[in-house]
Length: 126
Image (cartoon, rainbow, N blue to C red; front, side):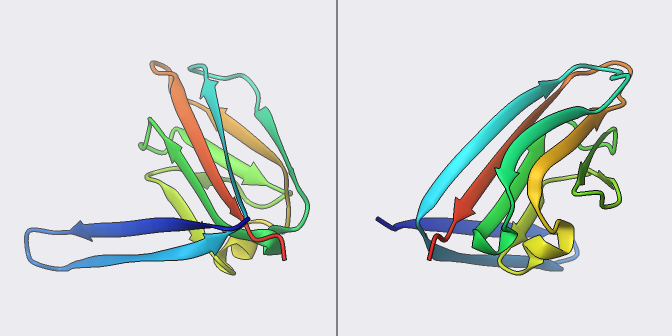
């Protein structure tokens, strides 16, 4: 049974430049994952998402408690992406990030702080 997922995004600068948008999507399933990355990790931590067809995803959202670039993520052999804010991918943009999401490799290079990572995934099963 599908369900409605509502989203909104806004951001702006004191100069008045900004963006404000919202919408919704019908999705068939939603799931989340959370992991803590210890500080100064000597190696990657692999997170098995087991998603081989990203075309079935309606959205992919990843947030980190550290947004200074010390946390990075790599999917399916792609270039590492440093997290400097939330990673929000919607629709066909997900395939630009990863051809599959079988495993995400995460690393925290912060010498002082652990990182809390949250991932939210929405699926279209048709």
